Image (cartoon, rainbow, N blue to C red; front, side, top):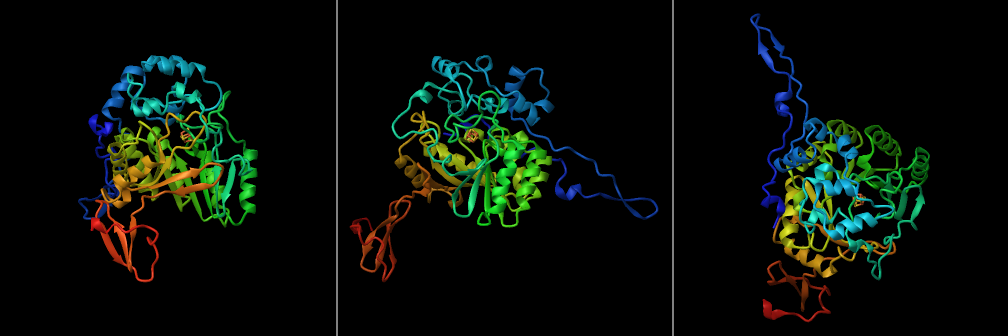
Amino acid sequence: MSLQIARGREARPPLRSVRSKQDARPQLKEVSTGTVVPAPVRKVALRFPVNAETRAFYKRFYPDTSSVEWNDWRWQMRTRIRTLDELNRIFRLSADEHEAVARHKGSLPVGITPYYASLMDLEDPSEPLRRTHITTGGEYIRTPGEDNDPLGEDHDTVAPGIVHRYPDRVLFLTTGTCSTYCRYCTRARVVGNPGGEYKLSMREWEQALAYLEAHTEVRDVLLSGGDPLTLGDDKLDYLLGRLRAIKHIEFLRIGTKIPMVLPQRITKELVAILKKYHPLWMSIHATHPSELTEETTESTSRLADAGIPLGSQTVLMKGINDDIAVMKPLMQGLLKRRVRPYYLYQCDPISGSAHFRTTVEKGLEIIEGLRGHTTGYATPIFAVDAPGGGGKIQIAPDFVVGRDGDDLLLRNFEGGVYRYPDPGGTLGANKAPKLAAE
Ligand code: SF4
């Protein structure tokens, strides 16, 4: 079941400016002369809510921290939990976790914002959010079919940070920095490099932009990384402005996990920047209902209120979210926050990912458990990103049962079989009709 609901973290109305939009207009008041003059508008800063469990966590582990600091995304970035000592201070690590973290070298270090750590179980190493962010011994076990770059992105890299695989759109890896490092990351090979998080220099960005300016077939740019929202406001503003100035680019997208792991980053200043570059869409990486807090209600509300269409992407993982009792509240909770569930991905076969990967049938089972059983909008597309650079391939349950003459036989979500008159069609003809179920 949803830990979120079990822990009483279901969202309450976000703390927002105490005035509604209507109230925010200058108030008119009568004065003795009979003229009507505007009353002064009281400015109320937008601030973030802090859910009760998170507040208890930060009082315990960061007692000298004010709520202003806690809600400052830069403080959260600076104070990320990155060392074994810090992990030991907060979590009771298992021997496996301890050994695996101590052994780690290279990219994809441990990095967890204090806010995200506050959502994790401090005692239980099997708790889903904790499993996805604290290294375990499974990462050192390499199994057949795994690769450091399973999607062949390096092969399709045509300029610094630009992966051009599909005809009319590109992936722009803007930075190697994330606020939290997911242990199943497809780009484990390049994010959070040792010796300072990898950043593209301005000269490399210019090379990337020059490629985009020259390639008029590109109409859609997906900014990813790393996490583009870890860039400072000025840099992001500059980059989006430069992209928007390219006439043939019709459409920008940002892929990010920030609204879930560092919701405080969604400041009113950031939102004001993003609003300038419409049409701008956002894909939010969501993993588990435990992420659906008051804080993430606020971050997604701010983005949605700015007119940014929000979609989600979720990686299917064993013991994390491979259960309809977990996935359904996650999808429904996202929808309640105006985030349309978009993709459910089969976990990519990166090196050391076997402990996260499910069978592909499991994904179909999850989709079958959603389709028809809840709002259609809450049912994402299930896809495998084909190893070797084949791109995303959708896999869907087969609801075609067979054919009986001119009738197509279809199965509904409850298993009932129904006829659809389809004269001249051949769909289903290669399947034995199952009329007994009618
Ligand atoms: S936030 Fe995205 S890019 Fe960063 S570690 Fe997680 S999956 Fe990888």
